[in-house]
Figure 1: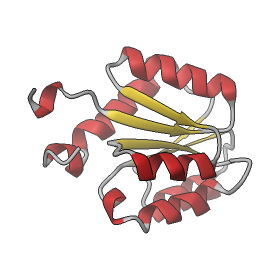
Figure 2: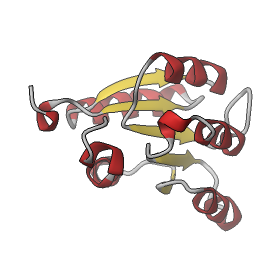
Figure 3: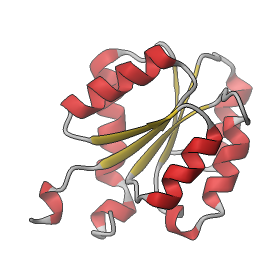
Figure 4: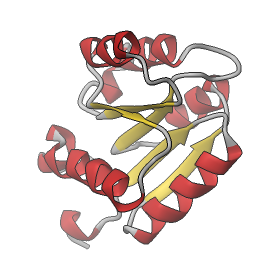
Length: 136
């Protein structure tokens, strides 16, 4: 099986069930293998168990701030080139700026707009240095 035919692995970490279901359905239909976590603790456990090509991270998690979790994830050398995309209910320029300054690939405000959201995610997968190098 060639690297191009391998489904990209996406981890979604969000506390909102409706958003989680929406992302699972849309990303799966787009050809991704999706794993989900409802809080930061479970997300960290999944990351230790598997390799992901992209992480979608909610800003407001029940057990930690998405920004704090982002910094923990970046401390893992295996995630250095993994794109991380923030999703948030907050329409706040300071949060948006903070996420991008931390090094996030994107910051997308909810509600997630159908195909536009999926296209943004897929574009980050295509441009990921990790995927291009065949490390995904």
